[in-house]
Image: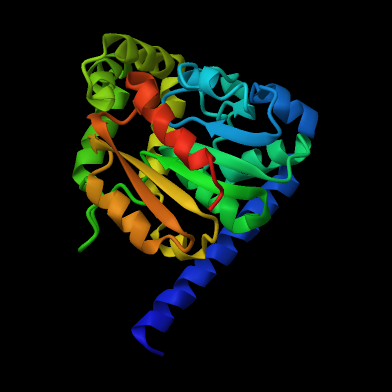
Length: 299
């Protein structure tokens, strides 16, 4: 078997394992759809016919989209929800046994769409939610018209020729800092992540980070760092738009190029002439322009 065949076989096995794991988790969760909608604070706003799902990243909640949402309510039906790890969700509902990989988060997303009887949508995912959207589109490609991936990375760790941006030792130091003094870590991390000199955005990101229970925040951080979706990117057939800022401390620009080269669907990259990992907080007007272009077509 040639090297390409080995890679393809490994990727296929990974995709199959992902689908099996998510199906098993969904079957075993025992939650009604109504309960899930309440638990994850699901909201549907706007009056348009087309549906846009806004899914936030680590350390935030759905309020991160507040500065973006008004631009789309007139023309779209917008679905917002909180990831189960968000500080806005009752931490008693975070199951440390279930959310060991991104698969369970994918189940939550798909269960929400099914409960709302949504059969086609645009999906906008920030950071880890971009990867959640990718797995969801592999499992249920008919649901997604387009994936808009903001600050996305399939792997944060460097690996041979792949530059994810970080060495394992760097993350271990980060985890140790989170464990030692979570408040001090947030105060240092929030400005770095926001990047741009926008004090209001730093305050908002700090607020939602503080809202997370520290043990959940650390657990989710480890889950994200240990994730590696490079092997399944080729199985995505949904058109994608990768949105990358000019300088992002969390995701180097080379990752956007990697996604474009390896995603299986038609993929374009939009570079924002701004800094930071959270453009929806720091420069919403700039991000909105790109989102409008991306949403204008599902090709």
